[in-house]
Amino acid sequence: MSAPANLEDMPSVDLMTELLRRLKCQTKPDKRPPGSGKGTQSPIVKDEYCLCHLATGDMLRAAVTAKTPLGIKAKEAMEKGELVSDDLVIGIIDDALKKPSCQKGFILDGFPRTVVQAKKLDEMLARRGVKVDKVLNFAIDDAILEERITGRWIHPSSGRSYHTKFAPPKVPGVDDVTGESLIQRKDDTAAVLKSRLEAFHKQTKPLGKFIKLNCNSVVAGKVSIGMVIDYYSKLGVVANLHAEKTPQEVTVEVKKALS
Image 1 (cartoon, rainbow, N blue to C red):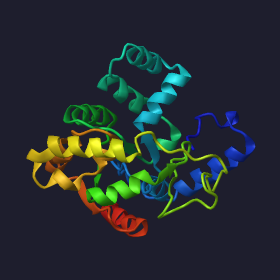
Image 2: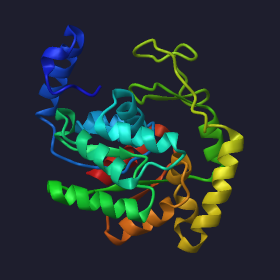
Image 3: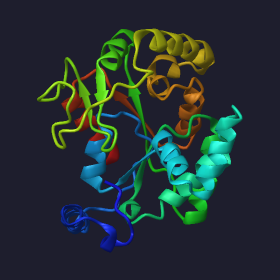
Image 4: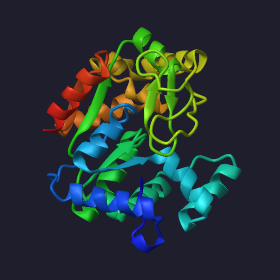
């Protein structure tokens, strides 16, 4: 839940939930591990460290719907069939970091996807006096990746992730917590995944050991993320995780990487 700065605008139930969250977060250490794009792990990390989860695709759509100044510019670009500029996305992230829920830090999901974006992100964070502390690189073989992605279902508002085989909801197609409907992303199909994997391996082949390690780029739908991993590796902030393990085992690796 992204809480508004003014608590008077919140319904009573949401208000109590937010107050309890803030009380809990006061006792948490100030750790800032951005870079995790794994839907199953992001909510766990978010709750464990009291971070805000910044999924740039969702943020962009929300800005367009809310008709914010940046959202209006983004909509104009999309209606022209143009890509939303890096500066616009950076601006949306910058605005999001002003929220009280981001006080302890943040997780970036879906951004940066190019080295240029990574450098612009670093420049913006430097102006705020913060930096990317950790980039989590989820390693997994193509065959396992296909099985996982094609069975994945998402609760849009919370980011909770389910899987028809490995982590099914109590009621098929329904979120365990809210009872709301789950969705399957349009990209979570075997055909789309195959195309992305082919492009990913072709584009990242010169990057040596990062060829097979980085499935995050496939999930994000971009093929240049391997270069981003290379960029952050030189800064000494990348943690390579064995994402073929069970979600519980991966959680242990994530917490170890962030400790």
